[in-house]
Image (tube, rainbow over all chains, first blue to last red; front, top):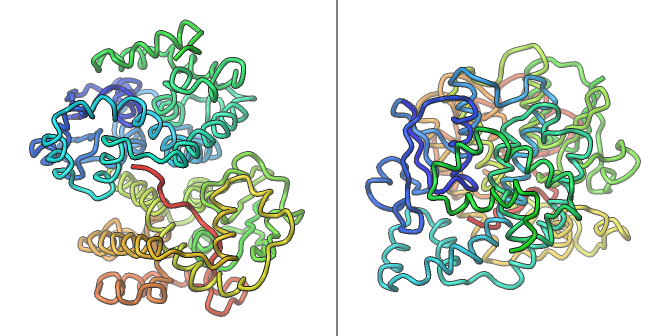
Length: 256
Length: 258
């Protein structure tokens, strides 16, 4: 039995959902409301003591790290491959997953949190927010949430994130210049993970990602967005993020 | 044709050297003087996108039939995938997941922390009073790598950065000690790339943080167990370095967010 605990099909939470759907693996979907801090409540901490979303549990065993949940699904179940068989393409998949996770991902997430998540959460009752922060089990996540909730990102930090996205999306655009998918000729975990991390950028930060500036990147986003599994994964959320896909598929998406 | 461009057998450079030795893979070794910035010059083939933007910072470059591969853990995985010899990746999906999760923790927490303290203790004193060759640092594509060099030249390691690095080393030691509860190796019964990855960074810990490493008995035994392997001995002897565990150059950045 495969259980996936997720918020909206976006960023990390979208990766295991999309992996299971692409692979054709049946799973139980558990929606965790991140903005209500459900991920820090005892029921959820019993599933994932780190209090992070997503979580994947297979026959009672917790699977770690959203990017590597894709590998796990690919290894543990039958279905179309999510990793290239050719070792150099497999290496490219790994390299770019790391680039997404450590270079462009954190920058995207910081912009997203400062623009959307922080303001949405900030309207809550102050005492309730304070208690919610105190329940967060790890120091790293307590710092991250405190910054987001109280809008404590410095101008310097946000400028660095924007600069990384300007150069990082260009690099992805360059990498896609001579093949359709991130790893090469085959759709893989790198497309799945990169898409989930970055599909909101043309709307959120069009200065970095647009048809004019990064055409190969935009064409790749649309290729991934057109897959049946991606459309299916969208239905697992509240619809809040589906709007971004519709704009993307329409081909425009330069108006925030 | 297989070529490995490498520096001292420590940290990221040590990992593929151990894998080559464990699997007895024939490979042309190409020593690079990282402190002379040879890695940015004509001694190496013109860099590809992935070589230029290697998130590991300074590290090895593998060239296989003209294709360039960077990032020491993934280079190690590649070598294990392509070549015969004893398997260093677990076959079971859950163990494989634990190995990859270790690699990510290593990249984002363990390596940056050890690298900061290692550059502070051993690289900065070597560079004290010197200035970098003109233009070299400005030509480095990733800002945090150039900043790491500038920090080392200036000997600028604020107390907060040192404390944060020590906190992360403590976390890593606790994690390793916990993983060793179930067997002689990090993933249990089998020696894997997780051990090779962890050892390459951990070897310097008794020097960098003796107080933190000192009360971890399983860690100390495991360190000795890895070091005693003939392949590891052979890798450590590469280039005849005296105390290779003190060779540091700017590595991966501390996670910026989340």
